[in-house]
Each structure stands twice: as structure tokens, then as C-alpha cells.
Image (cartoon, rainbow, N blue to C red; front, side, top):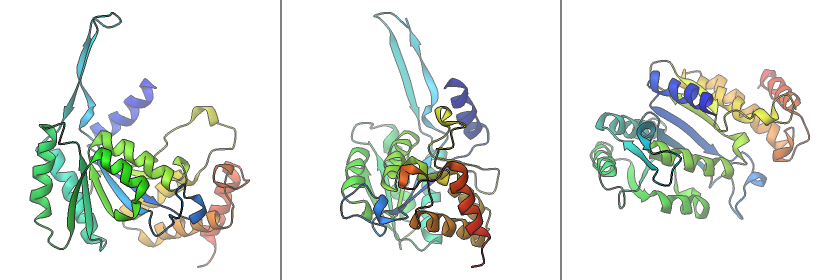
Length: 271
């Protein structure tokens, strides 16, 4: 997977796509893996810092392959990087009429880098008096995402933690096949992709769920300002899920192409 890592992370770093935007929204109650938890409780967004953290590969290995091997992996946090993703989360909440932003870190153990997150979050939240700003340690958040996902509206966190908790989010909304994401530099070139990435073992078998990729196109249109067109895609996907016109992983019997054709046809129908 080295080539895939270089392509994806290389694109994020070279284009400075600092906002990783991942909505988590349950489209049908029957898809929830949680007992007595439905669409009203699973509807939030995660903003993951996308260009720093442990993914920058600062560090190295010494005496690799021996019993004396030493491996060092540094986490990089800059004021610029932390400030702009935290500010983006609050601006998103303000623009969309949301009232809660929660920041996740591990500042009780990672006391240097995450002290910076604490400072920036406190300073930025003071600029948005109409928004309730809260903090959770990432291990506690992982628990609460399963126990009480309804408490969240907007989550902001670092690169590694955002990667992990959005996989939990994907499971909450029916599986990674449902999860869309955007890698965004506001006002500049951006990249949109399903959270699950590629799945070479499924290539050509007509079994992969296309909804994550389709909803990623809706995120692209939303980001470009085409909200009506974005909503048309989302409505068509919701209809496909409600009517069972989906792939087998979420209870349907269609192949990838057939599920995509149904959604495409529904988009073209008059409102």
C-alpha cells in the first residue's frame, strides 16, 4: 500500500488540503448497529486536521530488523495548522446554525502538542459566544460515540484521532460503504473521496457499495456552492436506502452498477 499512501497523503500535503470533512448521518434506522438509536441521534460532522500530526513521517528507524531496533515517530502540531482547522469547525457550526463544537485530544498524556490544541480551542471558542464549546479525551469520545452519539454536532480533532473516530462514525451510519469525505482547502483545489478508499479485492465483481463515492460527489457540489444539486443526490440516495435498492451489505440485492443506476435515475426524476 506504499504507492496508495504516497498518492493520497502526497496530494493532501502538496495541495495543503488541511480540512478533512466527514459527515456522519444515518439514513435509515434499520442500518444503525446501536439498539434504540436512530436517525435523530446519529447526525454530526467531524473535522480532522489533514496535513500534520503523526502522518508527516518525521522520525526514523535505527538497527531495523534486529533485537535492538529503535523506531521513532514524531507528532507535528503547529499553531497555524491547529488554528485553521479549529476555526473552520466553528465557522461551519455558525454558518449551518449549529450550537455545539467538541474538540478531542489526549492532552492528559500528550502534554506538549495537545496543550497547543487546548490553548487554540479555548481562544477560538471565545470568539463564538453563541456556540457551546466542549472538550473530551479521545478515548472517552470513542466510548461516547457508541453510548451517546446524539450529543455531538461538530467534532474537531487531529489527523490520527480523526482517522480513527470517523471509522466508528462510518459503522454508526451503516458501514464504511456509506461514508463520504472531502479533503478541502477553502477557496482552492479540493479532493473528494469515500472514507473507505480503494478495495482492490472487490474490483470488477460488481459488489462494492457505491453510496460513499456518490455522497462524496454531493459533498463536492455542496463545497462548490451547488446546494440544490447536492441535495438532489442526497435525496436520491435516501430513496435508494428506504426502498432497498442497494447492495447486499446494507440489505439490498443489487450490484454496484445497478444500485448506481437506480440512484442516477432517481436524480433525474422531477422533484
